[in-house]
Length: 126
Image 1 (tube, rainbow, N blue to C red):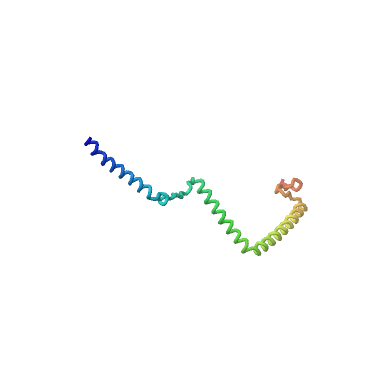
Image 2 (cartoon, rainbow, N blue to C red):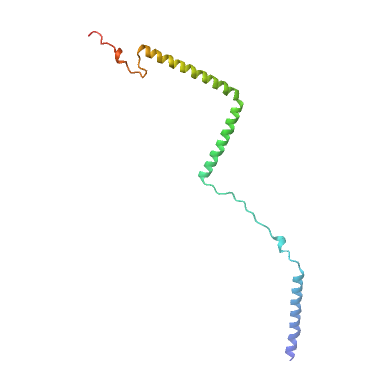
């Protein structure tokens, strides 16, 4: 019986220590949410060589269009003058072509450059 009485206070002390530990752990507030964080990793998308080449061409075309717009807006009056001059040249060329056609017809010249059978050169001396 003596042996049994000796284990009783030790068992009681262990139970009291466990109850105190449980009470203390319940009394401490849960701060595990405070240390949580979201990880955001920003990785650029993978592009093939063809996709990079297409993007470069698109950027180049955008720059070309911007440059063209600037040049057109700066030379708007000049473009009108050039257009008028080209129309004038076109009318003059049409007039020259009409005159040349009449001259070829009057002289009997084939407009394609073939010699006319009615005006063939005669053999000399025979």
